[in-house]
Length: 506
Image 1 (cartoon, rainbow, N blue to C red):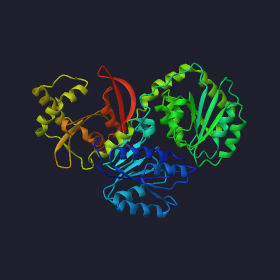
Image 2 (cartoon, rainbow, N blue to C red):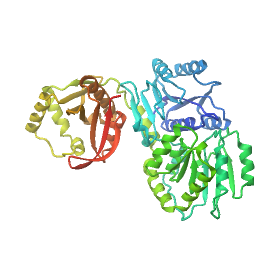
Image 3 (cartoon, rainbow, N blue to C red):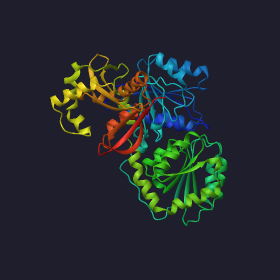
Image 4 (tube, rainbow, N blue to C red):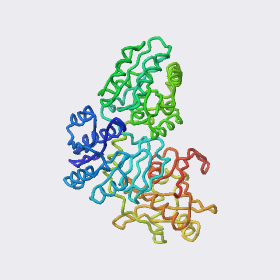
């Protein structure tokens, strides 16, 4: 990651008792990484918690506090004025109320835009980059501009500095767990924390103790304090904590919501049960359970105290399950997410890429690209290609109505790669792509694939595009994910194990 040399980042996110603190906290993680790389940060926020505001002040960020959030007209008017004072700044939006019109206004004001999202709820996105750090991100479909890049999945999880200090730490697994962390969001308006503390009273494990964490804006603090005093087991109630990594490391298991905290728990290898307070958290919890990384309890209002007691007891006693979760967790969230996001923000715009049909004049260029050592290593047939063999293949491709071969052109008119489609009789296509060696670090692959798939679907009526990629080719898997391909798992392709990925016309 290159130094930012004072480049400006303007972040727009809110926190209150209803939406919680997750949006603001993951923006804080990105802001810390931006500042560490030498950039400057401004926050624009509607924030009801003095503790959260103090965290931003402690970082010495520039802060503009709004009274009301969009669609209140003062929101955009204030944001527009701040952006005008920072020409060329990146803008970050994180919140479900910032619609496509808000995004369009940011772009029309001449700024680069990153949108942090969870569920793809909008009809259209104008962002330069869409970041979705969830396990289910690749299952979503974003309708966006040709220049938009997608950063999807847990490779891009944003973790704050205090978590990254624990990246060399690993968890010990006791035969019977006795320490429980309860963390159900900064607001917890339905007071699900109290429900969990009641369930803990019925857990029959000697030496059991718990820590319940609540946000500064939690409206039920007095009830929870009383419940902790009356508890038959030691319950430590902590408000607006600054040492969450220490508490997650202390805990043997956690009962958590399905928001940003889920990824922090995985990074700390903490086995967790997920109690969802909002519908958008369901996808997170379901995917975590599907991958054997935790257990989904369900929507909070539908989960009884008795069910909580049984499920907590089961996890506390199951050391094999806890060990499996802990072993897998750090593989899913590795702590490099913020650096990957900023590196993507530093890449030049890919919005001017174009495609043109290949001609025989491109024959030698494609031969040179095909014999590049990296391309051969990533291919299922790694042998070098002779000139005569290539010429025969190339002529057949140009002559065949079932083959479409495009040259990728950058904004200077220079060929930088090729993308090829092989059509079948069922209306599907197999795709392959390669980028010239000098251009591989620029992030062109995902954009070129998106443009090419859209063009083929429009001009040839193709509804589905398939790609088969070697399991260890993480760069290609990332580019195809960015283009909107869905990972369909492992298959056998050309007698080799491969990842099958699929793109479908909307």
